Image 1 (cartoon, rainbow, N blue to C red):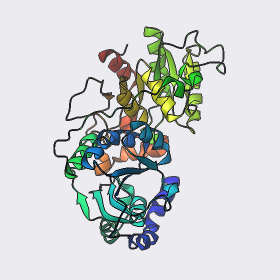
Image 2 (cartoon, one colour; image 1 turned 120 degrees about the vertical axis):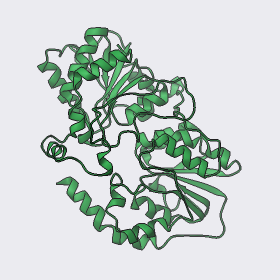
Image 3 (spheres, helix red, strand yellow; image 1 turned 90 degrees about the horizontal axis):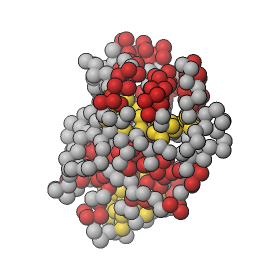
Length: 402
């Protein structure tokens, strides 16, 4: 019901959006600022950081201002790629007339276009947007309003096929902006200074963890990241419990469970399954929603490896150089996972387990009836449900995680 309500909201809001889009603010004079819009989720933002390193070379004598979601500001500031970072809450007073506005999100929404239209700039550039069903905001927008959204920009840079891996797409956009020799690589999150960290978190202080589950030493450990942006993409807690039991049996490593605020219920479900499987005494530390993003990155940096769904944890692991295993669906396989880069790197790329179903890429056309029924009954895509704990455990052995 909530999904249908969201769809209806996206559909009916387009007529109010069109009024704002038609008030596109173009100016003739500016303060020389280059404003880069990156309003998307944390995982996508981390992938963007690879291409962000090029903007200083493209615009060497300009002030670079990044407009991003509040959650992404710590990573943006830590990167050192921008002179200033602002959030949408700081608009409109936070900006004067910009020389160039650059909208970088491939799956751009009408909301992003409304924001871009409201910002005064001499020239506005955007990546040519995703017009597939994956981009629900565009898919539910009538063609005339889509054209109005795109007319905000003086130039739309084409980056290729809709299934192109996101790192390669961002690199293609940079080449479209003029840096022809740019090649995609793995984004990098630099280590924080030790005094900037919460040592209770990074030292895995267990004063609030029950003695039955507490380990005697904070290291070594690995991380399980069981959440996702949608429950449909989440591998079952029962399977994670089986994998945790096998890892402990083979290595004795402690498991640290991480995730975003609001996902605490996942940890409780995981504990229930550990108890059902007779492995309740395995040391499992709950860190869901209890770290800042920068602390989370350092926690992942110190881990032996990370296991998780196709979500931000996997991309953070790649950016800090920690081995990871991604349990991925087939719905948009190839766009975010597995990694494909044009450059060279010594850092480990995420290993991937997926079902390899014949309906792969269903997000771009249509899902099978069986999958739709499974989503309705269990809130899980069929390709996720097909991945067994045994398959993941074998992948851990094959990739020498255990």
